[in-house]
Length: 157
Image (cartoon, rainbow, N blue to C red; front, side, top):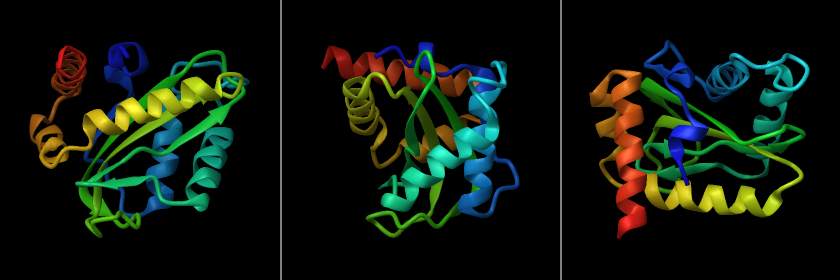
């Protein structure tokens, strides 16, 4: 998977004043809708889809990371990254607060793509030091470079 195709620096928000899961999902929805047609990628629809999926079970992986995700009637997959100053409670398996949220939207016409992407994202970023490393980088371009290298390393392994 090419994370650079899914994620761009304009969809990475660093340490915003977010202190609740609802506010985090609202911020992710706004990031995912950024630069797109309001009819296809609208904040409310994205928020509703992400939050509805979250109600089925926590998307927190542990290690300070969560991957809120949803299938929607959209033309292509898209991701956004939210890096929080203070973590939020998301019922993570390790009970730690979530500081890095990687939002993922996938076309509802491709459920197999949804599962494959989600699996690869989870396996690649769910490492003990990934969240703290992302937070330390502090710049969207550096974070995107780090993630690109992380995914290339996993493919080569």
